[in-house]
Each structure stands twice: as C-alpha cells, then as structure tokens.
Length: 244
Length: 317
Image (cartoon, rainbow over all chains, first blue to last red):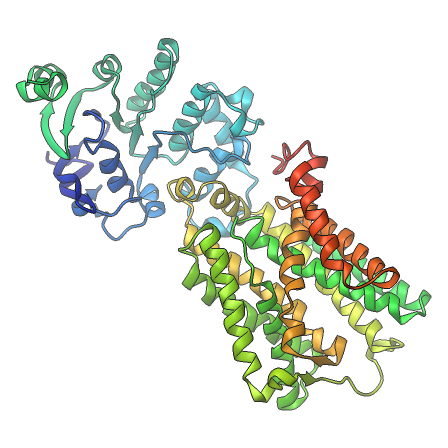
C-alpha cells in the first residue's frame, strides 16, 4: 500500500520452538479501519505486541516513515501508536481521571518531567471521559469499574495519547450486545478523528460492522487480506474457521 | 500548596523546633533520641520513593546509609572535612551508587529485585570490612572538636538541628515527587509497568530517577551518623534494623503518600526509643515485627490508607 501509515513486513516471532509469527505482512492506511481475525493462537496479539514494542520480533515495522525497531514502547506511543489490552490493565490505585492524565502528560506532551501534573490536561481528560461516557466516574478508583467501563477506560486512555493508529485488542470480549454497541460507537467515532484502527476480535458481527478491510491470521501466517465480503468467501478462511 | 511554600514551611518548622528545644531542653538524651527518630524519618521517606511510589522493594537501605557514613569517614581522614561537605558528598556518592545499582538491577522485578538489593548490601559490607583505610572490621572514629557551632550547647544538639533540617528537606522532596508528573509516572509503574510504558511513561528513566533520589537521601541520613556516634563499625552501620525499619515505617504509616513514612517513623521510632529506655533495646525488632503483622493484616495501606478509607483517596485529584 503506497503512503501507508503502518507497514509491517515479514514480522516473525518465536517463543522457544513455537513459531508465533512466521513472516506476517500488514499495511494500514491513515484513518483506515482494519479487522484482524483468526482462531486462538494464530498470532494476533503477538503481532500487536510487536507493533506496540512490548515484544521484540524479526522483520521490519515502519510507522509514519519511522523504523520502529530501535524504539521502546513509550517512544512508539509518542509517534502515535496506541493500544488497548485484551485484559484491561487500569492503573488500579488511581482514579479514572488520573488514568487519563498519564498518557496526556507523557505521550501527548513533550518534556513531561518539567511539568506539573495539575493543569489543562485535567480539562482534556474530562472531555475524553465525556466522549466515552465515563465523566460521572472520573473521581472513582479505576479498580472499582465494571467490565464495560474498564473497556471504555482502556479506549479513553488510548485516545488521550492523541494516536494516529489505535490497536484495539479484543476490546469487545465478554460484553453484552448493548455494551458491544457502546464500544463500537466509540471505535467508529475514531474514523471521524482520522485515526486508523486495527480491531482484533472474535465476534464476527462486530468485525463486519466495523471493518473496511479484514486480515486473517492462522498459525502465525496471514492467509487473507482484503474487503470483508471477499475475505469471508475465501476457501482458505473457511477451512481455517470451519475445518475441511 | 505549592512545593516552594511547603518546603519553606517545613524548613522553618524544623528550625523553630530545633531552636526552641535547644533553648528549653537541657537533657542531651532528648536530642539523641530525637536525632534517631528523625534519622528514621529521612530513611523511611527515602525508601518510600522507590518502594512505595515506584513499587520496587529495596532491602539494601543499610548499604546506602553506610555509603553516606563511610563517605564522611573518608573525608574526615583525608582533610577533616566540615560536616556540610560530608553531607553533600555522602548524598552525592549514595545517589551515584543508586543510579548505578538501578541501571544494573531495574530490569528485575519483584522478589528478584529485592534479592539483588540485599546482595548489593552484602557486597558493600564485605568491601568495607576489608578496607583498612576506613578501619575495616575494627571500625573508625570521627570526633568533632572544639565548641559546637551556632551557639548550640552540645554537638548532639547541633546534630539534632541538622537532622531536623534534613528530615524537612527529605519530606519536601518526597512531597514534590508525589505531586509532580514524575510521581504520577512512578505510580503508573507501580500499578502496571507494561501499561505505563504503553501509555508513554519512560519507565527505565523514571525508575533511575527514583533509585538516585532514594539512594541520595539515604546517604544523606548516613553522612552525619559518624559524627553522632563518634565511632562507626561495619556491623553497626550495616545493621539489619536499618533495612527492616526503612520498610516497616512506610508500611505502617502508608506507602502511597509522602506523609505515611513520616507518621510511621515518628510512631515506630518513638516507640522504639521508649522501649529502649524503659524495657530493653532487644525488644525493638520484636515491636517492629508485631506491628508489621498487625498492620499487614488489618490495614495493608497503613495508617494513611486507613484514614482515607483504605486508600480510596490515596492520590486525591
């Protein structure tokens, strides 16, 4: 893809003798909505970890013209790569508001050590919480939130870093139908901000509703990539999901 | 309250307390006991910057304390350095060693980091025991001579005043760290290091700042110790009680707030002094152990956490 925001080429990752990623290519354009699907153990989360920098793998990943290889995760988020976690990881001793102040102060601003923690970022954090429907819970400890609110907090924290690309790792897992709609609405709104989103998800209804393009991973290899209707009719994808 | 105002108030309070007690109290034991309690305020506050704010448990407090003490001994042997220079150099040496130790060990987490700090203390202890210049296992003497400066009646009064100022300074630094962006980043590391890194927090850099400041403050507390006792030997200055008290005091007072270690040190340090005089010095560690069991069981967030509804307002917004 020419002019792509994210270009991953031949990404590999081994855990001992197990090949989690066996040379995966993936490109994402600015503002694009990509669904990344595959059975359990296919390497989706490993690929996300390689992109975010929490796992080091082989191959090359470029983002917005920058080679990501030498960059630690905190430098990658400053470039504009935000992620949410499959299992929510809130800063449990902090309030919901303070959870957002972290990326606002550290990812979205320069020279954070020179700044005081109380200032305009509080207003900005409240504004983001309003968008995701958590404003009323801003003063509560994050560990007291419900499952759906924790998912919202994950996304709010990602939004707070002013990303160009958001990787949502199973952001809908364990939610009811109405809660799925709430989270999807937040993700769909990202398009309006020009943010590209990679949605990793098992729930096909949500993936189809959300994605402009779908990539399919199976045992560490990409077996399909394209528009949803094409990919889902692909015999290889059918075999991967339904068997021979 | 702004950090500058808080620092000014803390230092003025320390000066006022030191001045008033020096004028009104004639028994030198009061100053000796208070010096020890304030020394623990500095140690507990310093430990809490790494252990409480950042979540990295350091069992090597005694090593940093000893670095400060032996820096003073070296300077005294070299050219009978003034006490202010000893304090500055003790702080600097311990801070630098803290930075180095942090660089080597901060990729470890949890119990592995704790064991590494314990090992560091043992290595330093062995080094000092075999270093003849500072007296080796025999120890070394540092004697303050002449009249006490600034009109104090005795050196112990003078040292108490210095320790009061150092305690005020340490508390001001801890409060600044907690309320700044740095403190928010350290709290994020304590809660979830991977999530912190993925939220833009430069975790390694902040942890190095934490080990440096924490180590430096412990060294500062140790720098006046040789002047206080006149004699320092490795077994005394590397004593287990420094490591245990440095951990127990923040645990009892509350680790998420700068005031926790202060409360813990005043309470536990004060009780230890009372026990030492009225019962026996041997009961000190028993008291620490008993209180630790009580607090870990019924108030794991310490007195501060208990006061603020078990940590609900651990970090007010």
